[in-house]
Image 1: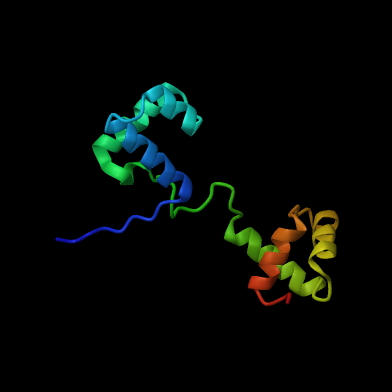
Image 2: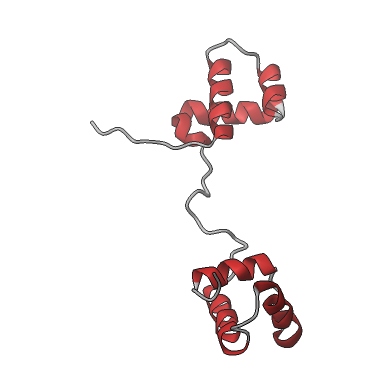
Length: 123
């Protein structure tokens, strides 16, 4: 018999504990809705999922998948190529400003800084 390990965030663990209390009859649905900041209908839906799938049903289905807002790898590579060619001695803030005005790429300086660090262009 194999045992699966399930990692849950603090919020998901709290949600599980409250729903377990509802399932065992110790907490009314209305009180659980107030504790969780959800509607009673949402608590009933979560309770149904908990009964069907167990604690694993409360974990986000998007876990481990890339964000919908993630920048494409080709765009990131193009930006870093431009930085390498023209702005090697620039900091991330000035490089971000130049990329926006000269090349039409609009990224925050923090995003660019993270990319530059990962690519070895910035310490």
